[in-house]
Image 1 (cartoon, rainbow over the protein chains, first blue to last red):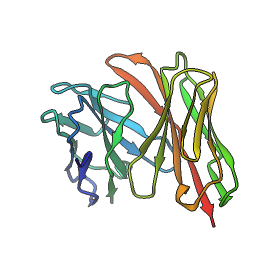
Image 2 (image 1 turned 180 degrees about the vertical axis):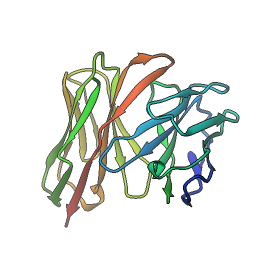
Image 3 (image 1 turned 90 degrees about the vertical axis):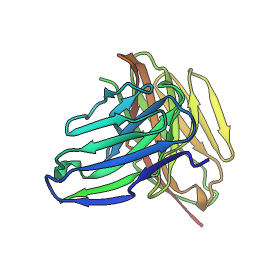
Image 4 (image 1 turned 60 degrees about the vertical axis):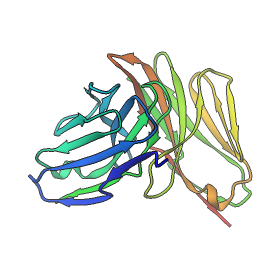
Length: 112
Length: 113
């Protein structure tokens, strides 16, 4: 039982490059989330998926897209990376949107 | 505006020196308050959920309490392995399809032998 897994763990991009962050959970959770964590700030929600087949914007969705591939997998795509997207990205899952969340280990992204 | 403020930003304790971390919040219609622990380079790990004023939860050396405006995480006789960043998050009323969760910036705790 791995919980929430994320790949890659580290990534360096140049401005304008694209990439996809992968997330998978093996707990049969309905809801999945993408957060970013920046120094001195709380975790901020980028996108979420309340259930398979649905996705919605969170607080800071600009510059990102998501895909809920199936119940297990939820990916985050940066189409044209910008230095402001340098951050640590966490995927999380929960049984329902109001319950406590399991977080993955994070992806540390640097955009030059 | 819904807001969560944690204090202090950083706290240094000697092993065995008890203390408290504070999480103050302004949100209309609290749906729950969560405490997480985050170790360096890792994702947050769930500790407690509190739902109503007066509620308390305990786990080993940690005890979380809740009032109408703030929550405290009390650490009794801490050990070096309690060193971590402690995050507080408040759940606001449902907006659209989502129960909005607002995180504080965290308190970095260092416990020295």
